[in-house]
Each structure stands twice: as structure tokens, then as C-alpha cells.
Image (cartoon, rainbow, N blue to C red; front, side, top):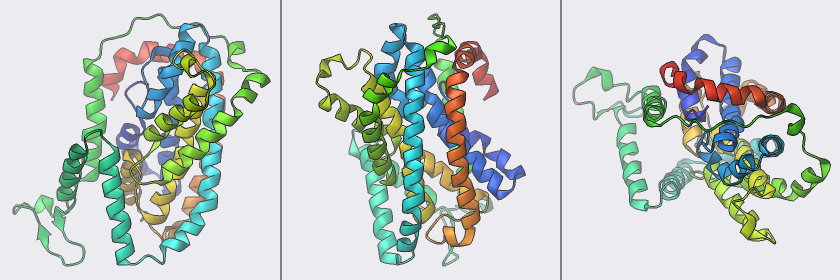
Length: 361
């Protein structure tokens, strides 16, 4: 659904976690994250409206394919690339997380301060073209974060005598307000697109082996790049997709064809976007450091359901974390099936649900 990404989805559906046990709640949050990243490409390809920010690059090649009558091919090819990228990212998560967790146990106060400082500077510097805006946002965030009782000294900070501020600013209220409500208001401003949807047959959703072979290199490059960038604080899927698209255009023998429906320009960013999920979960689980907006909301959600991300998370809540990671692998398989077999249904749903979406949110 256009306008609802993983950040808004987690923020809006977080109250459901309060009725579930810890494993089920974490699995629900992981499923929202993964499903939104996987499914955002559908509207990007069909109606040129990205489901979430990292799918902006998908519109560059996906929508031209739709206009050429190859919507089914674009949807199935991107779904396979997303599946492969997700699997590679989750394998990297399983391999790297235990080592980074043990390494994180050796971190003292100076090391954690240095890592957090790097994360804050990287987040403020990479998120906008104007670094000053990022630094201003960083300053506002730091001021908001110190409101309430200091956990070490017990001193009450910036409460202005208001008892309700002693517990600090509610992270969930901020997340729902900034992402959930703002997305709904943005949808209110948008005009409906009456462009006719393409008719998609199930047979058109199956690419040939030759088509898949041409895209193996792009998928592997995009997956590796997405995973690495996902691990870096402040980067995230959106940056990974743009870099991946640029690399494929540089490597192509016919770069002038990009923008007119080139396979590699679609598969590489999709693989990078989904591989970044596994990468972004590594610093979140092992160091308690979010790598982007989605994992920042997810960090607050984890704390809300009773988990404490950091170097000791595997030792204290290892059974919960490994169960959630197993669910990521299972969800990736289910998403591949759903995002191919049910694409004709999704196209109809997007067309019919637009006018009811805002009121539902």
C-alpha cells in the first residue's frame, strides 16, 4: 500500500505486541519490517509510487517495464531478487552476530561512546544533502532524549516541574505521530491516479532460466553491498539501493539503456534493499545501535516488549532472538510465494483501497 512503509507499520501495529508473548511479539515486528521491505516494490512497479523510500530506485526501471507490457515479468523478477538478497542478508546475520556480540562484550565506556558518536554523526551526515539540517535534527534529538530522570544520578532534567515528563518523552507517541499520522496526512493531499492498471496473468509471472542467469551477478553484487551498508550506522536500505543502481549502470556495456526497463537496474537494488535487513539487525541486536529510521523505531519497540538490545542480548534472550531469526527465513519463503502468486490480487487491492486507506489508518 503506497504511503505505508516499515516505520509507519511498526509504529501503528506496535500495540498488538502488548497482547502477545515475547517471541510472538518480536516475530510480528520482524514480519512487518520484512514484509514492508519486500512488498513495497509492487506499487513502485505498477503505478510508479514507491511503497517505502528504498523503493524509489525500483521505479526507475520497474515502471518503464510496466508501460512496455512487462509488469508481470518485472514483479516476478524483482520478487526473486528480493528473496535472494534477503536470504544472503540473513545468512550474514547468523554468521556475524555471535562474533560481533562477543566482541561487543569487550567494549568499555570509551569504546561505546566512540561508536555512538560515529553513529550519530553518520546518521546526521548521510541523511540529507545539507549537513547542517542533519546536525540540527541531531541536536533536537539529543535534547529530547535527555528529558526525564537520569538513570545514573537520579537527577530530573528539563521537566519544567511537570511530573508527566519525569519518565521522558514517549518514544511510541513520537513514532506514531511523526510516521503514522504524517503518512496519513500526506495521502490526504495526494490526488488519485486514474491510470488503468495492467492485466496480469499468472503465466506472465514466471521468468525464464536465461533471464535469471543474466541477473545472477547483479543480485550477488546488490546483496553484498546491501548487507555491508546495512551494518553501517546511519546508512540503511535507501542509500544501498542508490549505490547499487549506480554500480550496475557503471558496469553495464549499454548504460544509456538505463531508465528504459533494464533488468539489472531492477534486480540489484531490490536485492540490496532486502539484504540490508539482515545487515541492519546486526548492530541493533549486538550493540543496541540502530542503523536507520526503521531500526530506530524497532529499538524502541524491542525495549517496549521487554528486551534490551546490546552485547548481552544473546546471553540473556538468546532463545527469543534465534527464534525470531528462524522466522525471518520462513517469512522470506512465504513472501516469495505471496508476492508472485497473489500479485493479480494485490493490483486490484491497490486500486480499490486507495480511497479507504487514510480513514483506516
